[in-house]
Length: 239
Image: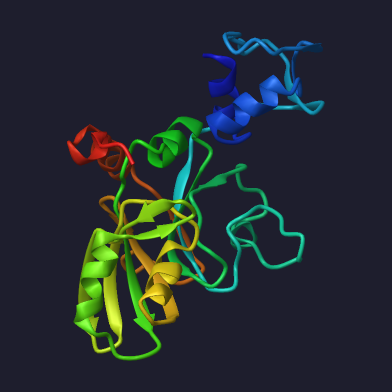
């Protein structure tokens, strides 16, 4: 197992983050700094990151119903509550796959499987994410084409893949992109403000009846369904 995969499997972070740690000389094998990305440590080797020994952990992926007011990070300089505060104290070290902003709610995946994280967040895959959005006033359908055509954000065209009204002030929106606060910014651009935003689906995995603030393990069948999406024609499109 290559060094970056070893670190990712040990819950250090995504493979991209592990590559950065290796390149920065922060990883040692048996006391020696290792910047060789092709190194393959064995179970008998002592691998450390910033002088802390790391161990391979049992692969774990969970689905969490993130409440509003929690940030999707392990620590916060403003001392706000984080999604990791919702997990048992002696839990394996996990990291989130993607994010929801502090005031958004709904389905968030956390894992210690770096390969899975890379597969679900790599720019060339367009994993669908579905949201239920409550607006500050009644929705006018003539604004939908602009959201579908796209609006430039951060130098790129941001598009919403599907727009479906589900009430006078409520929409069901589907994204295949991951631009920062994309829905809030796009909706604001056509004259509305988001009062509530809940992610209800990632790929084929749905939030369902999972209570707010609770989590559950993602089953092997659900993981297989998520990763199979990459092999569809849509999954092979580039962003």
